[in-house]
Length: 156
Image (cartoon, rainbow, N blue to C red; front, side):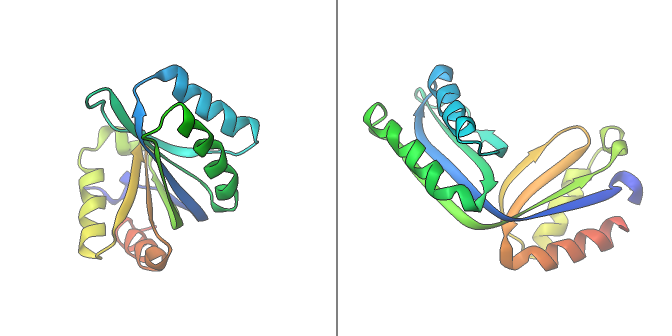
C-alpha cells in the first residue's frame, strides 16, 4: 500500500473521555445534554454512540480534561430523569489524528493503523473516522510510542 495514504498527523494532549451509559434512545434528551455542555462553552469532539439495545444507548465523547468537573455536574443533573444513568470519566488521554486526502480511494488504511497499534501494544479507548481521517484516543503513557510508530509506518 502506498505510504502517502496518510500525509499528516496531529496530537492533542490533556483530553478526557466521557461516557454516558444507559441513556434512553431519545434524541431530544441527548440534544439537551449536548446543548447544556455547549452553553457552558465546552467544546467536545469524537462523539460515538452505540446502537440502541432495548431502548438504551451509550454515548462517548472526548473533551479538554480541564472541563471534567463541570461536565460531570451537568450530566449528573440528568439522574433525576434518567435514574439508571452512569457517567464514566477517563482523563488520562491523548487524541491522535491521521489525515490523508487519498484515504478515500485507498482501502485498508484503518486496518493498517489498527495492526500498527496492536503490534505496539497500544490500547485504544475511542475511534472516530471520516473519509479522510482517523482519530483515536489512547492513554497518555502510550503517546510517544504511538507517534513514533505512525511516523515510521506512514513516512511522516
